[in-house]
Length: 430
Image (cartoon, rainbow, N blue to C red; front, side, top):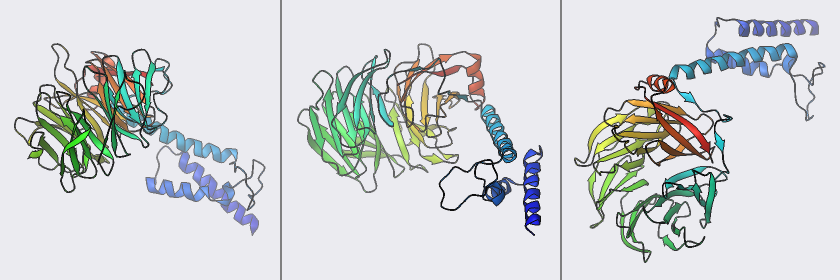
């Protein structure tokens, strides 16, 4: 009887080998998964070493599989790997290689994930991460200039006042700290008053006021010199995700988890316009340099949502175009500096590990860069028309160069329905 059971197990293994060796599978994918789990627990496949001894309960050792069954599983993995490669090739996306010898690896700015990045001047960027640090980095020379330590929870947003050395950082510790690169490593102001994580941070064009927004539903306006809160406004379910100050204006725009976009008058501290609610949470927003347009991004998953939307601020609530192509949450959307004689462009980064650049007016995707090992791409900071900084969950900060006219770029753009013409590549990580 034992001999017959052994033959039966051997026959099952042979059938499994035949199935995985076949170039024309006759079972559904769910059947494949069932058989994999079934044979993973099959007594015939539980071996101690390669000597055929059955596993003993209570012993702690690595179970190895006989050579012929390792060959079976190897063929299965090979099939999956080939199909995955074919899928990526069909998408026309240029994959990032973590070990690419052409990518320079500098000293990491953060230990852990990087949540936010912005520009202090043409050579220096400022970032914040899960390590609770605010870091000033010379991204051109590849060296850390300053690391500010003051928050006791992770940093969510950083902003800088143009033409100065002022830095503002928001955190999950419910506070906002103000730093000056030329005044040591201690904060020079602290803004306290929120009850939950601060996600929105914006400075007025004249550098006198600071706007903050939080998941506690409060929008606050502060005097920077005195660090006193001058105005507070609470709107039910207004869980703020991002805040932007409209250039040369008294208007502020904010996105929220309630799927709406609100425009505020900073003088009366009242909402002047509320855009039609989107289908998904609005995660981020940015205002064009001329103050005429707003771009916002959406939460999403499984190919649903994840779009960015262009709005005309001169006609509040007027949707111009949508940028669709990401398959997961679009975490960041930014207007790019327009090159001389070039067209206006928008950049987006997503939890699907890709960055896309779009024609602002036609919503055509001009190029895609996929950073498969980087995890969710959380924040973008354009430095000029050819350089872009990206904060990622796994691999810190990326310096990305944007070029024009290469054949590789044409494949990248065309593969996703975009016009060729942009070539994006990672040149450094830090």
